[in-house]
Length: 376
Length: 253
Image (tube, rainbow over all chains, first blue to last red; front, side, top):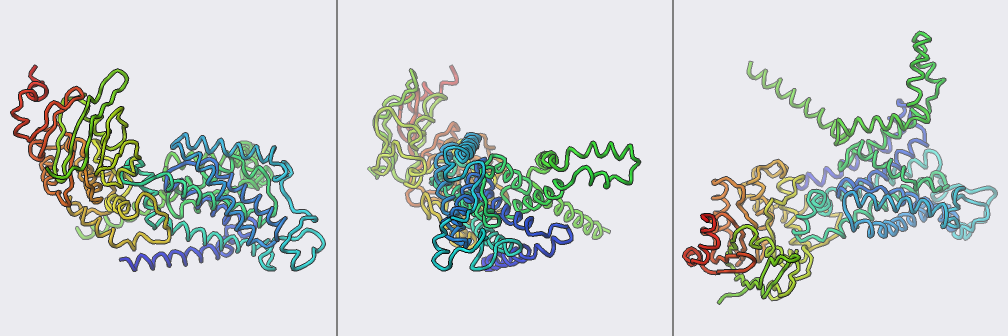
């Protein structure tokens, strides 16, 4: 049984890697095979996986994870400006700095639990967002956002070559990080992140986090100091968010404060809940669904709707366009909201729970049929 | 006189104008079952909370194995070997029975905090075997993967007992372990309590059910209005007129 378990971890990882790396192939028929969207899947996948380690395992609902996303992005861009256009130092420094900021935010916020914890993280998110716009302008470049410039030092790069003409682009030892190569870099990072998450889920540490979610009172009277457990989970998820932020800057070397706005934190909550809180794959499912639908719905405008309802008589066509148009394009969030409401009301465990219910129904049907046949 | 595990000396505790504990002295000996009885509002729960360090007494000391435990945190007191069973069963409702018992077993081995994520739970063979045998001792080893929250109240209580016992405590505190149980379950619990005597574990039992108290206790202390009015063997307590008046006969008035 123990050997089996080990092997199944390996099998899980191989299958997962295959699915992720072959995304350009199987997403092709869905019309989602272009680098920009694929990169988004991988980056938000990392963000949601990390968020799930905190929210899914310990049950602490944070509204401040966009802070670490922003910190990761800013750090990565600064690394591009000061050190090198190579993405490795950018990614490493982003993850470390995001971890440090998460340690600070977590240390303060985790003094409270439940709704008070959520409010504290929300307050931190707003604070960091406003700081990025005001006091920290020398670091964040305020409203304009932090960008690369020709006169940046790039110390490490200058050791090996002189500055070329025009803005350099991000690279991994000569491999440009735009387009598909950018996606594959993000995909490898996603696989690494998923591996860490899988390990945490299957470790005693993960079990203890689940036990904290289930009954923190009992946990304390069982001899556990719960605060360091929560803080560690918070820091790990913050580092995942930092990695996601860094990858955003890797694929597009620009960082703006809107990345830290509370809506960005809210988005990851939506993704995690939609897919299934506390499950391994749920958050990824949520990411793919939300980002894919966002991609489709926000591209639709009135002209597209007109052609879509072309088959109807013209008075009905116009009515349909008027009814549907608020839900597409800029109004895509309205659709997202409805979808989210539907999930929370009918499938509180997210889409993963939906799958499980379906599986159960099919299996019990088969069983009852087979028993009927036996009866005959 | 045998070795003392828990020593409560001159403890006083007031809540505002109410004197909940008045000059309490109590000595729990190794391997003994000490029952604390008394009418509602006598201060039993307060005394228990003082024992586990949840409440700090106004004056006096609480010593566990010679070490002062006043002001210590819950997990520190647990790690010292003082484990508590709650009045309403406190278990991990969202976890399986096996996981419920593995968590305290891990606490015993790993201490109050350990960060090690690259070791798979499936490799913790020792812990798992220990957990299974603990569940076996309460007769639940056939439903390892059932969720704890889906069990009956009596089963939850027995599970909580297993959760506490797997830590091999030096002193076990039981707050009304049979409250709300059916007679059959009560008898099972009594048998279980009698059985677990390994390693000189001492027990404090707070209980309303006299049947339970007289079947398991070695010593009984009677608490009334925040004071201990009598301490002695079950037979001495039964024959004590002061106790008769304050507690046993109290319902006749």
